[in-house]
Amino acid sequence: MKITDVDKNLQINNTINKDDVVWYKADVFPFKVYGAYSTSPYKRIPTDLALKIGNNMEYLHTNTAGIRIRFRTSSPYLALHVKWDQQTVFYHMATTGTSSFDVFSYDTVTHKQSFVIPVIAPCDAPQGFDGVVDLLGRMQDYILNFPHYNNVTELYIGVKENSEFEESAEYLNRLPVVFYGSSITQGACASRPGNTYINFLSRWLDMDYINLGFAGNCLAEQEMAEYLSGLKMSVFVSDYDHNAPEPEFLEKNHYKLYEIIRRSNPDLPYVLLSRPNYIFDLNGDARRKVVMETFCKALNNGDRNIYFIDGASMFAQDEYDACTVDLCHPNDLGFYRFAQALYPTFKEIFKKIL
Image 1 (cartoon, rainbow, N blue to C red):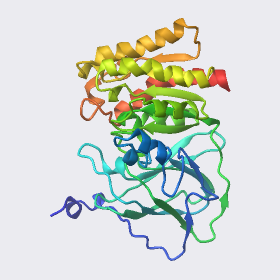
Image 2 (image 1 turned 120 degrees about the horizontal axis):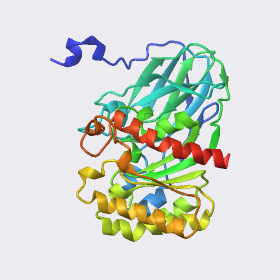
Image 3 (image 1 turned 135 degrees about the horizontal axis):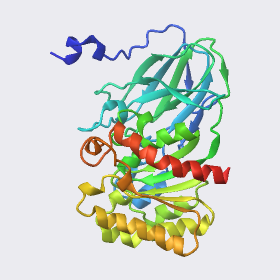
Image 4 (image 1 turned 120 degrees about the vertical axis):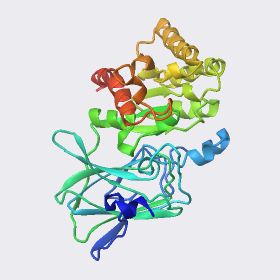
């Protein structure tokens, strides 16, 4: 017997019983794609760069972490036809985060986002899935967040026949913030895409972003550093020390990454993060010291656009040990506190650059 037989509320109905649905390819007007290098299939960096770096980047660069679609419609429902070539399944992360989408509404007056509904993938969907959910039933801006640990080769969006479409609003902070980091940056282990620390910040600051978190494979290689330095961005966030095999490795390339990006972006706000769960790592203090040394060296060299956010403060509230699923990857509470710790610095940065 399955639990869904016992509790009907745990069932997922992915059958699209609509005879008035009209399908659109999701990467063409009136839909606007954010956070992607390319679409069909969706990628976060060029494939030739991923192949040059090697390791597991060929797989990871097609994970759709941080990719979003904005649109404005009067349709009372949203249908998705999703294609991928394999499904990512974790032992410690819900399918609602690894393989599913979620929908937020966007208020063009207040610039606030509000969670509407998830579009949940089944646990056994090796080639993709179909889903349909109710929308608000009036002319409304929406943001569709992609899964953080699955690839998406094609996406079609279905709406009610004769529904109205208009061009959606843009982010107030249009030039994206680039986040480079580990599996935590990519989104492990948020329960759904909208609950990562990056997405919290995006909602609070109405901020576009590019998620370049690559689980276990952010090592600040020369090729990656040069690619990052050429991106058009409003802020760069360095959050990759988790992936360094040991503190000595981090020491060799942490400041070097800063130098390469700073050379091409002399006035770019550059944010350094140290890990929030450092006390659970035998080398946590040594890694934190490397990040702090990069900050101090840059500051001593006259850089006034360098920022350091100490991970030691991120979970430092009641129930500190309730913020992760495995002493490493944040749950929703951990991501929320992570975002709270970053928010004052980002608010200050955007006041200066706008």
